[in-house]
Length: 428
Image (cartoon, rainbow, N blue to C red; front, top):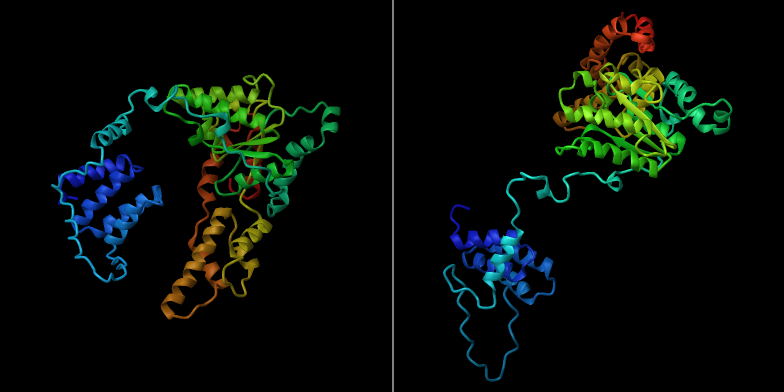
């Protein structure tokens, strides 16, 4: 504060630097109480009691700061004159001899670190962050494909291309089917790619490890590549494990378009880990799933056979899926006679995120009316249909961009499924 004395400011800084020094904190509280700052003195005394719960001086100081009168002693037949109370400490009063100021100053100087990190060594170690034991791996979850509403085509393709070979090791060996490679999920944002990945992990009874760009990138040279290696090492030790690479276009973007050497090296390291070369033992029991909204921005080397060589288009939820999503988001809201059939028809091309937003918007409308009238009313079909008219499907811009890719950049038939869908929906 601007009106604080230099001594108060110095003590405040010293206490902040050495929060566990109880005598220093109590001396600071005494000075605050002497200046009439009772609330601050109480706070400092309470902090001292946290570090030293049985400290009688801290308790006595708190009682004085709170203005609680002490319990008077029993009357004596010949009471002696009460001694004069000690004068309150003043900012300019001499320092108590019991407090070692030299030791306090030395402790403060020991706690002060570098103001600027100009050398990785200032952070400790070699500057490489990321330990294979530090990555959070989720245990096998209860989510299954049966919990994914609708999306029959997606489930059938997952079963044929990915799940059936993994569930039937004898048949896999009979037909020489390799477990190498992974699955790339792509499609408009908000359509449940992450949920489907968790459902696949649940079907396999596998652990689940999510990886995004923020988990990998590091400011120190070589640290990002080490993070990628540590992630896959963790997955190999926790096998069976599903490694889910979220937003793959950010993590594994085309190296021809990348000017940053760090990102290029991350892609190189990712390719090495997908091949299982770095571990020596391969990726047995490690299943790699990835998701992206823009597969055309993913480095082509990541999609070659043996890596992310299977692709699955995840489209906006179909009618049964929309009904299931709407039921889920309305399950705990006060609703009345909601016509889900009308609502499902009015939400064609809505993503799962759009449907959640629709329910939120309808709830806001009913809440506002209730606040205005002072009478609670339930959410009706009218509220939900009105919200559907206000919301434009977030998938439309994605299909506008994907149309050009499907028509003019469909090398090798990578986007045949997208092209078929656009033709079926007459979006070409």
